[in-house]
Image 1 (cartoon, one colour):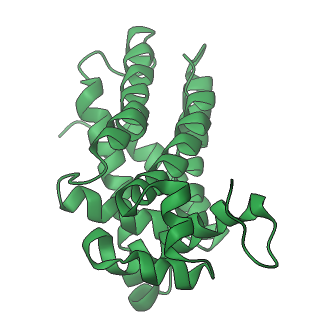
Image 2: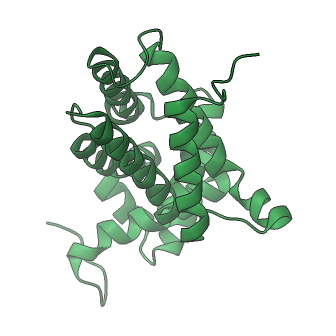
Image 3: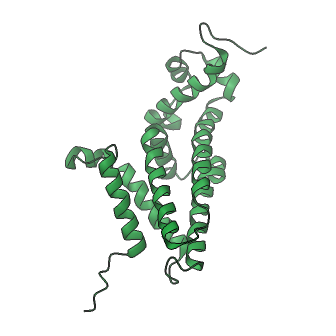
Amino acid sequence: MRPRTKNRPIESTRDCILQSAKVVFSKFGFDGASLKVIAEASRTNVALVSYYFGGKEGLYKACLEEFGKNRRTAMHSILSAPHSGADFQSKLRLWMESFFQANLEDPDMVRILHREMVEEIRVGKAVFEKYFLQIFSELVSFLEHSRELGFIREDVDSYFAASFLMSAMGDTVRIDPIRKKFHRKTLGSEKFRNALVEQFLSFFTKGLGSGNKE
């Protein structure tokens, strides 16, 4: 028999636990979080958490999987092989916009992912490989197809290019609170975010050189 919670539709219980877990894991990390605190935050109980997720590790992986699955689906729909230089830039711009938007919509998962990477993917390795490494691999493939089609330089290494881009964008998200505090600029501002995407696109597709001879 499925457990029930008082005054709450059974369909919403699992999601409520999941959303509360994101907040708790984001604040305390995997080791510091407890099922008791998560149960209290979701107004359920430890037995329900275990019923739906099998324990703390299962719950943690479920948080990563939900975010990863959504991101992989969104990114996959964007990064099909471009058919022109303009299409290449359009898809890369859309990919950047989607990247920043996802991070704005789920800041708790962003902090969880950053902690996972600092701790060398200690708990969610299988989920990380299934979703987040796949996102990276699809970006590498997109850049490789673009290079083969002549939309980026022949000497560009697709793996390095994807690494540079994702690292730069990830750091841009990570330092946003500092940027907001000291420079009064934030990804939360659509105007700033759009300008940032255009600068990323320009740097990435044109480079920083002026093209002038010495």
